[in-house]
Length: 280
Length: 280
Image 1: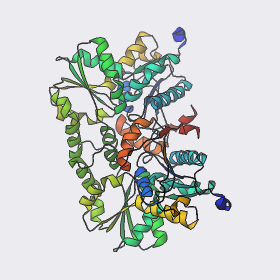
Image 2: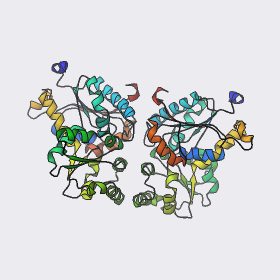
Image 3: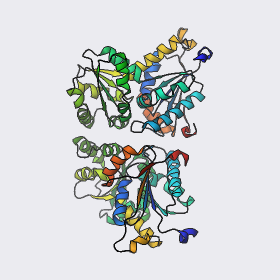
Image 4: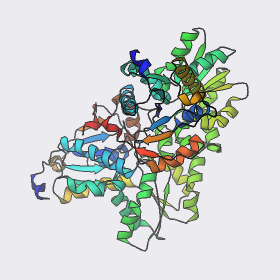
């Protein structure tokens, strides 16, 4: 990109998701890049994306990115597995900033850490149908075996706080039986809501299966890109480094978002502004 | 309305919903008004409405109605409990056709049939927060006691076909315990998805609690309005009466809708056309 040299290093990172799930990615970003300014956009007015078509997901993703571009972000994290797997590759060349999605980092971590060469992917219908995780994994090593499974009820269960309930265990056992049968040793949590159910999923799969949290891997990938392209915030080199500013935008009224967001992010969320995303 | 006399009696009924749930209402309409032409619009590209704000729900509802008006329908059934309870009263006077929502018919049936004067309402967060059922019930009889409860997981469970599963019973027992404690004798299924879980809800509540299906009541209300305003399709008076034409429109790709829709409607659904609803 010709204009990389012109990037304002103090500009914010833009992070977007179909709703609140991407806050689990933001949480990891804030851990390792605390000095960066961040703008988060959550499309809560049209969430969830996971059951929709490629056409609609691509249209929504373009609008989300257009809003972040207007905020003059220096870099974009697509924190939504569905948008990353279905739309990101088709649109990334149309914008003058670098973008990282959650698929490639999660796929790379799984490919590196599996010992048996047998990897499971769980996500939404759209993510699984796209086959994006398997494509990335096979680019790294075509011999790896990949098994993908949609677990659509995990999103509403996580959003409703049905975390430690017997019903959630029953549904998880029901969904994940196939993954147990095919003898994987590594399971990618291919939806940003799933880390909230990590405990349940881990119990059902057993200790011998390694769970990969795409959010953690994506935060590291974002740090690597910022560092390699020399656009880390100048505050990064100060001691102690100053904490960046965080701003939140949503496509529906902010009140409800604040409560759920604080649970997902693990800290109080304020300064939430509403955007009419249909105008982008 | 001045232009009632100008209504084309052969024109179609317009029925809309946030997605597939309204097909349970269409099913009841087709039973008692088989001779009517029907246009169904399902906003599957933006479903579900139940967790969104009044602002967004009203914006989406206006777009849904604008599309049906363009189809020159003679009458509109708002088959979505959320849209009916949150938006319908605010917008109905802005359009030149009569509209019926699902709240008033369900509320009336509950008020007429309760013996103890204690009525339960279950629905989405938006429906429950609107208090619309309680308002209609109290217009009929201010002495009736109304208890309202949001059961948000029932929608994804119904859509995923989790009908007869133990997990669904556990969640239903969890949600409905309050309704059992307050000793209601009548429970309104205030969401068009809930009739799919009628068996589970009935088992949990027990035989002594009467379940009211708003869809059935709404179909009867629609027939009454069409009859009273003399705009029933002329085919109604023929013997045997000819079957009306059914057309389906959705705001995302039609393929997935066809399968789920056939399950909800109990018959094959074809002739499904996609609409870009954001243009309305």
